[in-house]
Image (cartoon, rainbow over all chains, first blue to last red; front, side, top):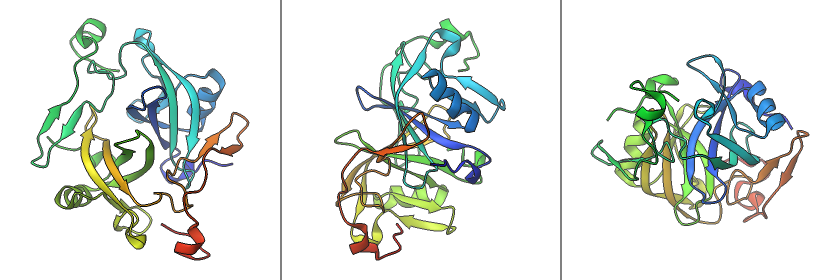
Length: 129
Length: 129
């Protein structure tokens, strides 16, 4: 089967879901190399659009996403990684999931979960994943 | 709060998750108008890149996605819709979820769930969502 990388500049969106809890943790992008590296290592590897290179989620702080299975959608243009998330949290803001805010109808947001770790202790003042 | 629509041609990816079961059902794209329409109607509305217009999931067959809540990620460039899926299945191939295939390491795929409906009865011979 062929993944439709050509639809969006050689990349496809890859949803990351906790295999145990079902929680959606983040969305990254994968190019063909990132997918191959994910399959080779069993750890989620993405392609950074901003930095134009591969990155391994949480590699800078001992965090990692062990891939349990990769699903592909009907159009073969989106991946779903079901993972075991090792470590305190996926999000560089200190939360388990990057989707820690609810968007209200008036355009404001509400934080819906507690921080899992203090990002300033790990990343310093300017937090980056 | 401002959604970063400018990062990808005026759109952001929107993951759709069943609020009750946690199952990831599909991924669509939303432009600003699709998000506003989703918030106004309480039903998931997407922007079709192929057809260059708004579409409501499953509108052609009485299926709909009632939005329970919208989450936004840390970078404000991805949405997560937690929904109640009304109807038999989201996928135009006849499955509850578009992610009904597992991608194996050898590049083949394995269908992991049973069909929820017969798409040929709804869409005719050339199935389209």
